[in-house]
Image 1: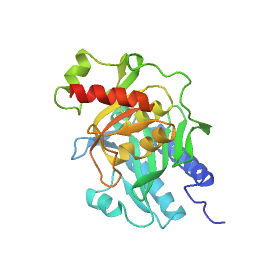
Image 2: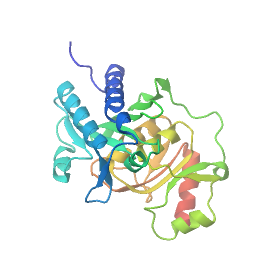
Image 3: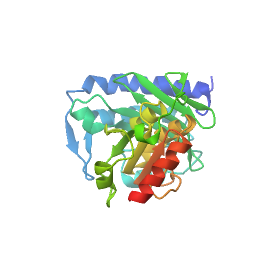
Image 4: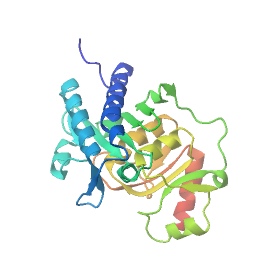
Length: 270
């Protein structure tokens, strides 16, 4: 029997089962007991990162051999060689939120996207702590555990919004302005870019700001947000790019109106 196209519901269901299985087998048994070491870029890597990447890339290669493979834990030269080649490229972050994972904080995820023609066409983010699987197909919608993600019936005004803001990578006077006189009602920073995108898509927060994340941090989540009706741009107001490894800033919101108000405040206070 032929393997289903990954850009179809049947293909997405196969991917979801695959990612769930690998995460339950390779991530959760190591949670709270896995050691780590520091990579050259200063980030952490654990045995869970490498085990998930090896398992998923091996399965993807068997199921869809015409698609190239790129994972965060590959070398940079190999990553660039894979990006944009062939019929499409799988973009994998095997464990987004490794620092949380190492320190026993249950906020981390597997993030997987299929890039074709410079855009994500499939996105999947799996949170094994909550067993929540966020997914999307370009121009077909986004789902949480199979239930369509839709905008909440009531969207708060900007001053009542919950914002997910990563202050670490912001520059200039913007971090200070956000600390002293923010335009929103409340702010959080959880430490997993992939889940940040998904939680906004699910209406758990309304605004997003990040000063610089890599392609594998946002490829899947940004598609899920877009298919749920949200909008995202860079700090400069440009479209997100999926043809380089990053870093890229991100400004996002659950609705167009919120985005316009949020972006206008940022521009005025940057």
